[in-house]
Amino acid sequence: MDDRGGIGRQLKRTREDRGLTQEQLAERSGLSRDIIAKLEQGRRRSARLTTIMRLANALDVELAEMIGKRDRMGADRDGGSVLALRDALISPGFLSGADDGHHGEPTSLADVTAAVEDACRRYWAGDFGWLLARLPGLIGEARQTHAAVGEAAVYPLAMAYDLAASIMVHLGRDDLAAIGAERAIATAHGGGDELLWATLHATYAWVLLHQARLGEAERLAASMAQRIEPAFSAPASHIAAWGNLLMTALAPAAAAGQDISEYITLASAGAERLGEHVGVYNSAFGPATVAMQATHAYSVRREPDKALVASRRIRPGQVTGIAYGSHLLDVAQAHLDARDHTAAVRHLQEARALSPVWFRHQRVALTLVAEVREAETRPSAAVRSLANSLPLEG
Image (cartoon, rainbow, N blue to C red; front, side):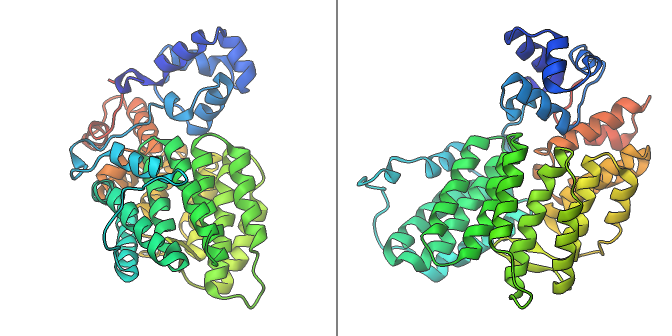
C-alpha cells in the first residue's frame, strides 16, 4: 500500500477486487457502511486497529497488507539486512542431512549466551538497527554451538530465534515472525526447561495477534498459562512466566471484545505474591505489568477513564524501554478518547523519544497522530513534528 495514499485506497481496491459492495463488506465485517464509505472516500484517514482487523478478515487479506506495514528502518539499519535475517530463519541447512554451512570452532556457550542476553537488552532499548545487523550471525553462532554441545545450548539458540521473530513483527513480516517463533519453541522443546518452552509461546501468540487471529492467540497463551499454573510455593520465575502468559492472553481478548476481568484478577493475585517486577526469559512480570496490560485492554475497549486509572498504578522506572513506549501509546490513546489532545501529544512525544525507529513501526502511533492532526484546525508544531516522523497521508 502506498503509505501516502491512506488506508482508504487500499480498502476500496481490495473490496472491489473481491467483488463486494460496501453494504456486503459491512455485513461481513460487522461494521457500519458509513465507516467503510468514509474511509474509502478519505473523510476518515485513520481507523482503530480492531476495525482494520475486522475488515482484513472479512476481505481475506493479511492485516499487514491492509495497513501497509513494512520495513521502515531507512538509514538506521546499521548495515543490516532483512533478507539476511530471513535467510537465517529459512535456510536449506535446516533440511535433514543438509550442510548448514557453519564450520570451524564453535563459539563457547558462555560467549554465545552473553551475546544473546546483550541482544535481548538491545531489543527492549529499541536498537533495531544493531539487531538487524547482528542477529543473522548470532543465530548462526548459536546453531553451531547447539550442534556442538547439545541441550546446554538450547537457551541461547531459542532466544535468538525468538528475538528474530519479535523484530520481524515490527518490520511487518508476520509470516517470517511465525517461522522464527516456531523455531524457538521447537528448539526449547528439545531441552529440559518447561518454563522456557512455555514462555516462548507468548511470542507466537503475539504473532497471531498481529495476524488478526484473535481467538487463536488468546487460546494459545491461556492454555500455556493453564499448563504451567504454579503452586502457592512456586519460585518467583515460575509465577512470572505464568503471569506473563496470562497478560499475553488478555490483549487479544480485549481486542475481540471479550470479558477480561478473570485475566486481570488472576494476574493481580500472582503479582501480589511477587510484590516486585521479576524477569524471566526476556520478559517480565509484576504489579506494574498488570497495570500496564490493564491500561492497554481498557484503551483498546475505548474506556479511557479506566485506562488512565490503571496507568497511575505504575511508578516511574518500573517499566522501561519500548515496553514503556507501548504503554505511553496506550495512555495517549486514552487521553485522545477523553478529548485531551495536549496530554495525548505529550505522551506521543515521550514515546518517540525512547526509540524513533521503534516508534515509526507502530501502527497505533500512526493512527493516533493522524487522529490528532485531523481534529486540530491548525496543527501545532508538536503535531507537525510527530506527523513528519511517520508515514502519514498528506
